[in-house]
Length: 311
Image (tube, rainbow, N blue to C red):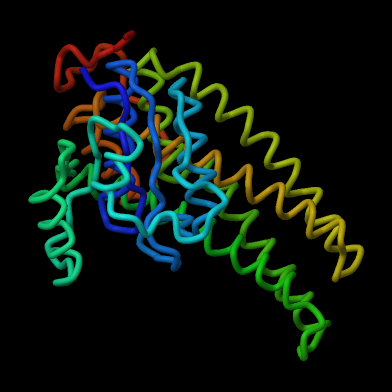
């Protein structure tokens, strides 16, 4: 039985699914998890893809699953550059979890993967992502929203760091106000009529086992909405502001943690408990812009044992 998993965290498509799969496995077998943050450059394909946010997200997901976890080499630049096989052996891991490479992966990535599979003394679990077209479209909308939130937060933090550095301070303050307004609009949509809100509504009917997690996320969203309102009030008083920078850093960390819980707990639950009819209904309602309507509790769904799941 596996007791210690090494899970790579990178910017490849499918990486979010791989983390969810690995955390579910770790929870099922009672294993602890070490996350390996690979690479140091931002990658737009993974929402919140800068290393500090990577860490915040995966740690939040692991905590939500009740898992013992650590980030390999936390606080040591370049720790993620080690080979997964060597690091797993050094740490005493008995399984490595990696995302399947995309079809358009570059030659260097393919060579690295082949080398890992050929030389690792620790078994490697390649986590694939198979979705119906409807499910893929719904999840793409959810992850697009996460990327958009991450992009706005990174832009705000970068603007704060550059205030007064050979730029028009008044123009920069106005740009930050605009970014805050865009962020507020996006966050309201995420809890109102956007894909995540509809997905949450469907899960409340199909999967009682995630009700407590959904309730916690609702509480966090209410808290974050208040924090965002406070940010906008601070910004209205004038920028640059040390109080704004502090409040923004706190808000951003909480936002990335919340997205990590969704990606590591809620999205895997949706894959497990929602059937083809649910995904088709969600996809259709999003395409038409209809109001979010959860499925009826007695509505046929696939698989049968996923309905009203309670374990």
